[in-house]
Length: 495
Image 1 (cartoon, rainbow, N blue to C red):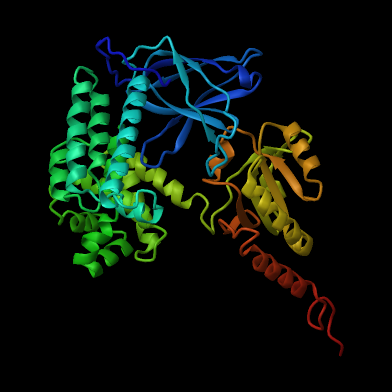
Image 2 (image 1 turned 180 degrees about the horizontal axis):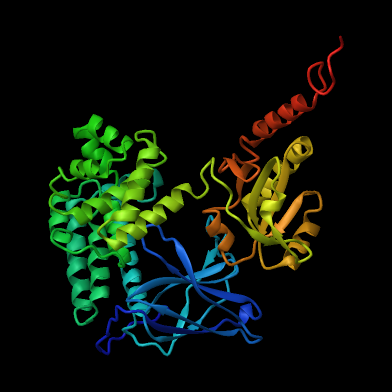
């Protein structure tokens, strides 16, 4: 996909109604595996929805078909390897490359590759955005190096001093950004694609963010009087960064008592009113509501505001907002915050055991259970399993252990068990399509949950290497107490 960009400036039509898209994938390295196509429901929470899947044939070929509206950010995934792309109504010929040796994996156990597009117009959105991101990344790297050199010309190799020169928004840096801005706009001037123009606009806007940025100037230049661009990634990144901590920087400082009580009461209108007292949001209900729900999400795990009230407000927006995009975003935020919250039930899962038979996880949950996800070739998982093995020896009589390995199939689990013969507890296979991680709202591996029956008691639970031991020991002591025969328990008292 990383090719020189040549512009035969042709018009790109943008359809807003759902229209078919076809992906013809060539992935010989992954022959015989299943490939999955997901779309991101929206760009604020990045929650995924499956669109299509297919089995790669013996040569690694597969065809995926789906329907999309406008410009849709999507993800292709084969096992633990994934790649992002943009979809419009078209036919795409895609090469899914092997994972280069030494490629780092993300915290959720996956690794990213760069798709290879063939028979594709230079004005396709994937080609345009790849070229844009490369230019923006290169400028940021050059600008940071220039700032460091200016800030500390006598110590260019001192990393401790280099750090001080980052994100200073000096006059020199602003001049460089303005020059780059003009050049980039001229370069893309003849691209007649409104969506891409917005991506360029807000990609450049993000370069101006920093501690010395003038909020009023940035707002007037990039946000005032403009529609909310929910489907433009650079816009979403800009909004998130621009309004970071807005809730606690403005209404909290000006009317702390009023804001705290409004949130505790679940009074969305009052919170909106307090936010709109800042003139950047005044007379813009749409942007104010968007800032409110995204800021409630950011503050949810803090100590300033009542969580029940925040959930109530998000529920109100999810059910009754005048903006359908906000209803979707708020619904996904609620799911993200509460899907695995202590006191809720573990989502129903049907997994596979080592014999290849389906197992309903609910049927295994009796008493206290430590339920956890690990991945193969996950060094952190290996480290934690060493500590977990000792905890199982000490507390396995009081707590049931159920491990879920994310991988290809029963054979993978069999190989894994043979390689770890001392990890003697119930093991299940969680597949490799991301479904289990999405259902459990897992953003990294390994992750541990303590349950009583189906109810989540600690979610997530502490890691075996740092805090899980005392929790399990306490449960063991409680079980011993409950099972101890005393004059008043287990046998009738003597008369």
